[in-house]
Amino acid sequence: MLKQMPAARILHGDKGYDSNAIRSQVEENGTMPNILPKANRRGKNCFSPVLYRNRNAIERMFCRLKDFRRIATRYDRNTVNFLAAVCIAATVSYWL
Image 1 (spheres, rainbow, N blue to C red):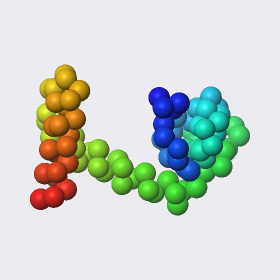
Image 2 (cartoon, one colour):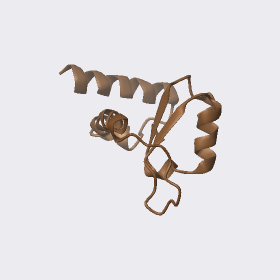
Image 3 (spheres, rainbow, N blue to C red):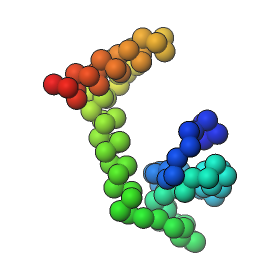
């Protein structure tokens, strides 16, 4: 999936993505990884907590979408129907 990622300046990631392989693959695309280092990592990589706060807005958006049972349990197996349900849920949760 990282190879299909569009061009970006910074990639925010969770502790689960803190590996040398992922970091090098992101850097090959010309993107700076801003991934929270694991507690047991010996060599701490460059990390900016100020930039990492922006990731919180994305997490809140996904949590708000998952309030809709249809989205959280993925009732719609067809991709087009699922995308339509996500669009409707996003419209309802952000417009109203």
